[in-house]
Image 1 (cartoon, rainbow, N blue to C red):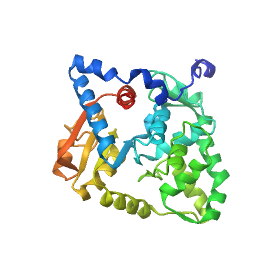
Image 2: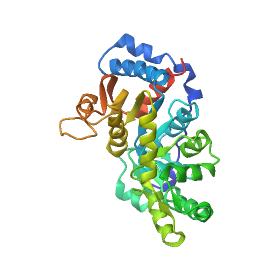
Image 3: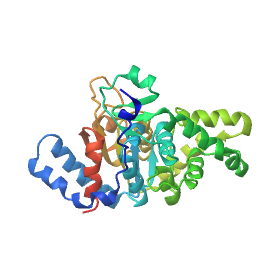
Length: 311
C-alpha cells in the first residue's frame, strides 16, 4: 500500500459538548442490567457521588488513550472542574504536545503489516497510525524552542510546574496540558523520563543545567492527601499511573471512591489486574468505600461515564 492510501482519516478529539444528548444513555444499560452493563451503571453512581462529595478527585490514565479522540474529553473534564489532580504516564505528554503542535494521527487497523509501516515511516499504536514526522521531531522541536526561556525563569523545576509552563505555551483548546495550566490542576508523571519529552529534557539538561525535582511532586501529593476530607479516583488502565494514585491514598487510610476501567485480569497477581478489593488489603482503598471495576475498552466506557455527568 502507498502512504497516502493509509493516512486518510485524521483522529479528531471528542468534547463534552458533543455528549450532551447522551447524558441518560446509562439508563438504557440499567434496563439491560447484564454483566458489564451493571458495572457501568454502578460506575456512574459512584462517579456522581465522588464529584459531589470528594474534595480531592484523581483522574488516572495511561498514555495510549491520548492518541485517540479521548484526548479532548480528558481536557474538558479538567476544564469543567470534575477532577483536580491528574496522574498519568510519560507518553501522555508526548502525544499531547505532538498533537498540540501540528502532529496528525490517523485511523488505521490492527492488522496492518508492521514491516510495511516501518518502510513507510508510520508508527502504529494499536489501530492508530502516527506518521513519524508527527511525533518525535515535533516534540524535539517544541522542547528546543522553549527550554532556554523556561530555564531562564529558574533551573530546577517540579515536574508539574514544568508541565504548566509548556501548557502555558499551547493554543490548542483540546490540549490536556493547556487545560491543566489554565485550571492550575497538577499533572503528576512519576515516569516522566520514559518517553520522548523526558528524553529531550535530559538531552537539553546537558546544556542548560535544567534539573527536575520529583520530590516536590511527591510533596504536593502528600499535602493534598493529608489536607483532604474525602478522596476519589477514576483510574483507567494500570501500571505506574494506577499504582501512584492508590499508593499515596494509603496514607489517609485509602480512597473513599474508586472506579477502575481495565482490560487486565487478576490471575497473574499484577497490579494492573488487581481489583479494588485487593487494594483494601493494602489500605489503599477504604473497606467502606464505594468502588467498582468495569471491564472493557475505555474508548467505549469513558464517553458513557462522562456523558452521565451532564444529566
